[in-house]
Image (tube, rainbow, N blue to C red; front, side, top):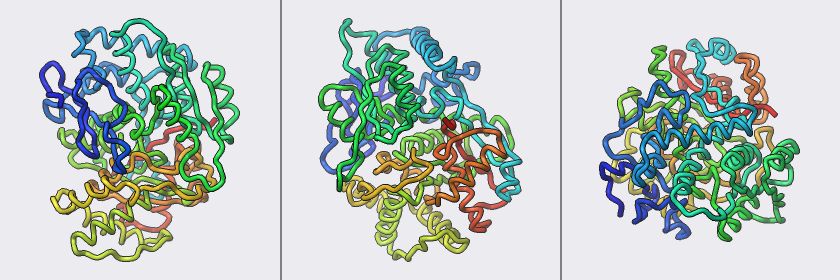
Length: 484
């Protein structure tokens, strides 16, 4: 088991079973115990207290320079004898290469707006915080996840003998594939992409321009689970490197996304325009929700945020495996505490949302108790009881969140239960109206997937649930993908 020392203050640990790699210079993608029926995602842990490096290098515009001392890749490089300046040079070199392949876009701290117009459209008294990821590398937040992963691969590459590198592999319906294509091209790495047959033609064309090898994966009749993920997993078994946004396939992708949580927390505190009470964000595979929750949790533990904001994952009625898992685990927790589970109305209404809100606060109040933690840990050891593939994913204009499974469900639910939040399942009408409202109120042309978090807030507001989202609460949404 690795020891956190002054020379290496970052270590990897499985969030499901606690396994840690013995070699502190190794960069495994997954837990060695994966495949036993439990939930396993490798996570980065830091010594030196939760605030170590969290305020970052305020003069750096690149988040991977600003918060480099919180990155496992930085600690790995230091363990290998790199100077800090060498790591910064690596980030800047890769960023210049990324800009060359992505119309001059590089990594930068993304804008945070306080939107009065959006609040007015939602009938809210307090302005809504809007974090805009649509002008990020490749047009979405996905590159954040993958760049954190790429840095670790490049640190090890610089300390190995020259030779032909194995290909990178990614399964995606669009945005993650584009992000992987840009980053692989910037690093001079081969990339295999596994896409559904209905992937946008522009996405396929752009991937081929970037030199990626594209595989179209059809779903067999009656097949459970995403066929693109199945083909991707076979490629990894054959020797490809998992270059994926699913934490279950490569846990290092979560860390890169945590930079979004650190940005959100530090920017709101710096602006001094009220507290952050709730965050609504879309969930497909779950890496975004997992990463933002962890980033905000670290900011709260460091004293930057007064409290952890309530996390509200948003899914579409066409496919909502996380909301289903939440309900299954919540009922188990309620039985364990002697409360008894009450039936939940399927449609959003003021009464139903008020009930969910009260229930969520009750669950949060007992979340840290040993009995509740033991029940939740047991659900991680029997993953399929809570998180199983959605039997028949439907169609949605928010096609980017139609994942058969919420792969990072465990960390997502930790954030939901700990914060007193709850999932929101929205209709196609909510998605369409939120997408229109996002552009008309903020001028940001997000796609329907990227504005799905806003659809959750809109659905709650349309239900007339003022008690659940009070007029003076500080609420944030992330607009995460550009309209193509």
